[in-house]
Length: 116
Image (cartoon, rainbow, N blue to C red; front, side, top):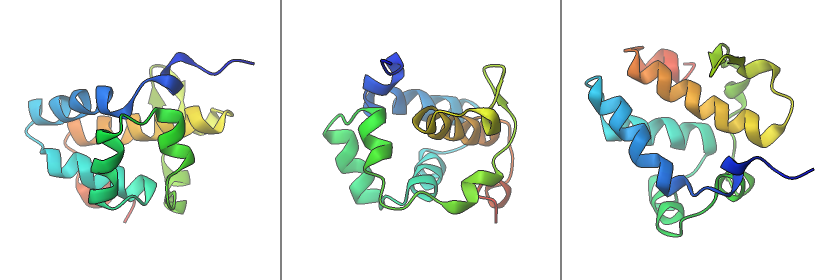
């Protein structure tokens, strides 16, 4: 079965939209970066390298140094789909990220977003 179209899209092409969504609600690029690094285990420098390389979502998550085990606590819906019910692993990781960015834009405290 062929992967979803989003798998081949570069993280770098979507990242500005994550930042814009957060900044429109008074949050910061640094908070977006913190969320992405928390979720994937990338250092900020390694994350920026992935952006510069225009890494696809599929490769970005496949190469993630240490996916955060607390991500399984992420619950709720993104685009009408419950993230905890998504069976395909790469799509679930992408939706976890989407959900965290949504929570940031909705004003949720970073401690709660990062499941601290």
